[in-house]
Every structure is written in structure tokens, then in C-alpha cells.
Image 1 (cartoon, helix red, strand yellow):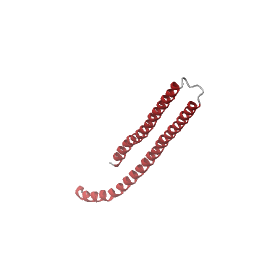
Image 2 (image 1 turned 180 degrees about the vertical axis):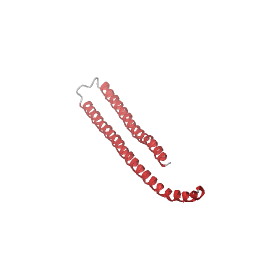
Image 3 (image 1 turned 60 degrees about the horizontal axis):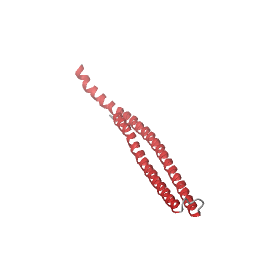
Image 4 (image 1 turned 90 degrees about the horizontal axis):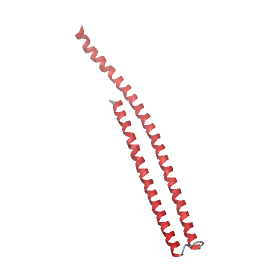
Length: 136
């Protein structure tokens, strides 16, 4: 019975891990969507400025805008990289947690089985001593 409960709980752990990963992936996808909309907005602003200035080659204000866009892209890339590292570390931490939990549950099952065996010995001895006179 204990082994079955242990097996069922181990069976449910991947679903828990999957939910945790789904939450992290959802956060990461939100960041990616925000990054894409930011890029689209910056490109739109850059194009508007270029149209106003007739192409705007060599204009200092457009170069400043381009520099701002590049800085923003670098920030977003760094943010996405850090989010990816968080997901990887969450997977590793959950893997270690699963291993530790499985080891503890296995140890607990062995200990409880041993104690259950020790407790059944007196019961079996009493049962045998009760049945033995009936057999003679």
C-alpha cells in the first residue's frame, strides 16, 4: 500500500514540474512579445522620422534614435537571456528536488515496511499460539 502511494506521488511529480515550467515559459513568452512590440514601435518611429526628413541619411537625430533602438534591443536580449537562465535553473532545481523527494520517500517506505514487519511478528506468534492447540 505504501509503495503504491509512493508510486502514485512519483507519477504526479512530472505534472507538477510541467506546470512550473509552463509558468516560466509563459513569463518568457510574455517578455518576447513585449520585446517584439517594442521593436515594431521603434522601427515605426524610425520610419516616420526618415519619411519626414526625406530619407534622413546622416541626420544626427536619426542616428540618436538608431542608437536608442540598438540599446533597447541589447537590453531586451539580455533580459531574454536571463529569463532563459532562470528557466534552466528552475528545471535543475526541480530535478534535484524530485530526486531528493524520491530518495526520502523510498527510505520512509523501507523504514515503515520494516516497522510493519516487526509489528506483525508478535501478532503472528499470537495467532499461531491460538491456532496450534486447535490443530492437535
